[in-house]
Image (cartoon, rainbow, N blue to C red):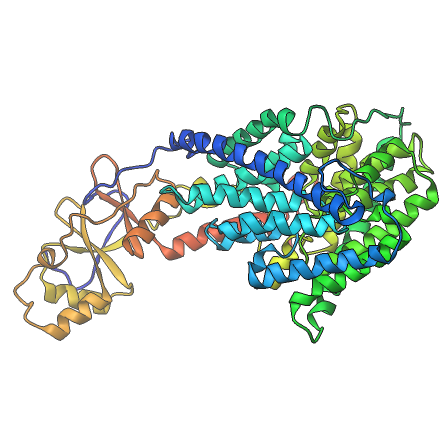
Length: 605
């Protein structure tokens, strides 16, 4: 049947051409391939645990060699280091070594590790180099061993991640699968050092994975469990900082915990601002960045002359804060000196982590505040540590469980949660980015850390498709089709056969080409557009599947057909996909009250 204009076909007329395999819908998209990743994660978890042990041994070796002239791996306290000119010179020499390693080895060893891991995940296809796996622990050991006020967790996250990434690159894996193994190595390393498998998995979810899916969660958890199995052989058993000082809080105790969290959030915001002000100051220096760690080392050494215990990892300081074996003046001095040298050293681009310094700074603040609160100062120091970690890293669940696993005290979950959530709320409201993501943003990358359900996975095609569709008849001539398209108002038209099943799609570009070519007067439209591989979707498909088809085939408009008869019932276009996004935005921005509100009617003029 010939016609001058495309005829309208509504949802009552049906038709289809070709079927693509339909994805089985369910709560999760994970398939049996996760078992392969799980097996790989066990290997990566072992590698991450061994790397953690090597890193700790290197740090201890460098510390003893630099400060005490001993070539052994017996842990020492910086409180025993002599306050001589050597205390100023050692961090400078360490900074020079790190600057040279970064310039002539790999620039990626600069910084505290977690932003670099995030960057590798988001823009690097989760591919990390062997250089990073080797140079990061060595540079971190030199930095911390020569007095750098850092922790080992950032370097081990970077090193463990590099081990996972390198292992993954030996196999045919997708970027998402490489990411899973990279994060598995990072979680394993953190678990081995601190003995905190649950917190390590939560850190992976809150900071590194950028998703909450079984396909990644199960392997990462498997790697953390593997690492905790290795830990008794490598580091011993029991919590790193045993603590049991739960006070009998009054009725307003949780409010005090939240108040301490607010203080930690303000402290975190101040430190973050100061850090990037100092980074900007280093950027303005008229010398190559290779020399910056040495300048940072000079400040570290000067700070060590004031308070030697501010140098290095400072695990002994954390233990003393929890047990309360410190004087007020000592705690205040450690807080100020540690904050100052940590900020300058980190801004200089040297190699080291942020977690242990955050614990000390938050713990010192909590200890001092605890002098005016019920209970022992050590309890409030623990809350300050968790709140500082949760607020600065924007990971409140990690901060809460980390404190519990570090101390073995499971009875203070409510106070910890109140403090970390309060700190988290303050930093989220005060700062657009965290101490981790600001560095990435300054390199031109945008990171969002809000997880939510994909609206395209929730919406059915039938809810957004156009149900009245202008179509062309496959039996009509090409000449009539050209005329109809030129007179029509759409860019493209489905072509249907006698049973209303789509056999192809014709665009204005096709019509212009045929008109320019000429010689198609005797041809029927089906001879020009019949396409057995035409991609279609069905009304009960989720919109995400239609998006996948559009990307795979390049079709900007996908016919929607009845699953049983194959007849055309609608058309899905790019504009319809935008409507899904518009609905989500509207649901977040439109505010209405449905109860207790009097209906307001405006009188007619």
